[in-house]
Length: 106
Image (cartoon, rainbow, N blue to C red; front, side):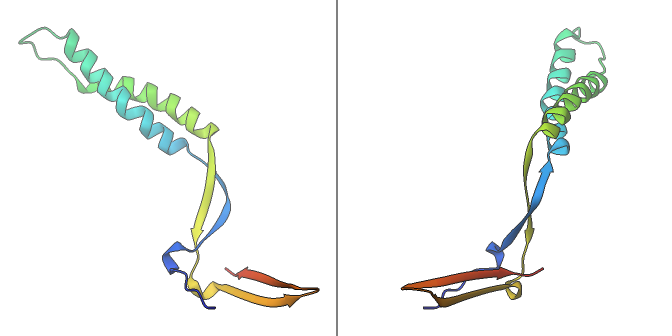
């Protein structure tokens, strides 16, 4: 029996990675939005208010918190493997069994 595996689905686990940049981005966006909203709510009608500066300051503070939380979270790091680097073999085993092996080379 022969099975084909899509090349796009082949990947190899290469260890763990931390998520500080993603945490910083996820912390910055809602913090910046809140900073702009809060500055706009405290601004008098008809006056010119600087909304960018409070958005950046609050966003930077929440980005630092998000980066800290993201640095504590580890996820798996996967690397794409080409189809030529995968070999599958089936062989008889001692007794009444079969032995299967998958070999990945990088």
